[in-house]
Length: 243
Image (cartoon, rainbow, N blue to C red; front, side):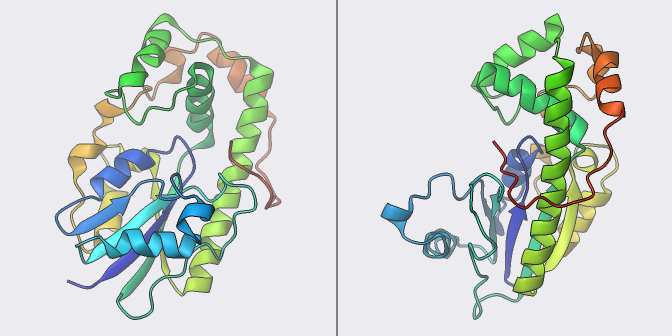
């Protein structure tokens, strides 16, 4: 099996926790949110920190997930692929429709918790609220939705430029196809990595929120009207930070 290093670039509420778990198999290693515990004063540079963690992986395929918009001033030079012990360099780009991403972020932000799946201990309040019906302020939603659109475009631009600088291939995965009956994106991912992902981590029933937002958002039509006039972003704003 060829030796592969990968970076999975994503935003919040895109299913990255589940995908990261699915990429932990007998032949592959994936560390979720690798820079969450990174302290430059303690661990040194991000390059040294990541190199140390990946060096401990005992698998031929190893990588990590990262939200590059999470830290202000974060740059394209955060990590370089190893030159001497890898056959394939791969950038995974995880995307999700900004509409449900915004819904999930606002609901999670309201409760101050960001569970990865409905089985997490802190998902109970969210599920109870959804069962009782959720009202979301239209103006707040429209602003957050516009930011989600910009963030996704910024992430795409970051991923493509990073891959170009690193001479790495890009494999794009969408949340919608990852949790749907259509396995096209998962098959493409498996072919790119040369492994079978653990699909038990990608069951639709593990999702916190149902796909049918009209079923639990009491002012769903109002939110649709609030975002109907928003155009797709045409300019990349490199200083957009995901909060």
